[in-house]
Image (cartoon, rainbow, N blue to C red; front, side):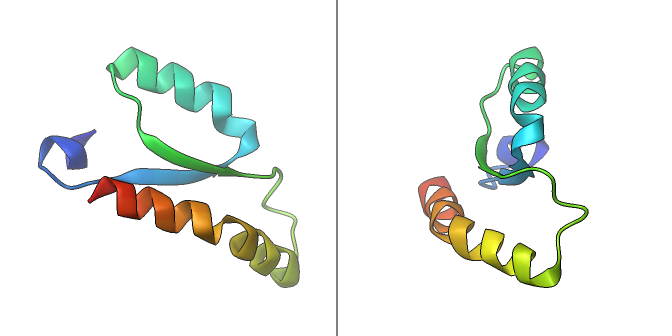
Length: 69
């Protein structure tokens, strides 16, 4: 919200565990931030699994950035 208020496009990437929390936080702040959600959990994944998550999500993340401009 701070970045957006300064004219800087923003968004975030989080795991699906945080979909409801992100929506609730956005509602409480009166914003709907651009977001990309990847499968949960994250912390116990191997490097190879994290690389695959990144490959799967990269197009959505690039689209998020492109829409923000």
